[in-house]
Image (cartoon, rainbow, N blue to C red):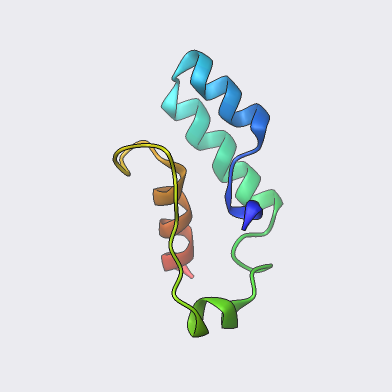
Length: 74
């Protein structure tokens, strides 16, 4: 689901400056703009197993943690 991923611009900027706080702030704002999780089809998450993928080794500095926390809060 591409709507759960950062934009190419946000990702590119993070790869250049490695500023996690800036990246996290921008990605959270993007999820708010995209109305995540309200716009997601809830039944897809209830019926099918879901897996959040990312190229980061750990979830400490990874968008999947931010998505998971946001989904869990709902």
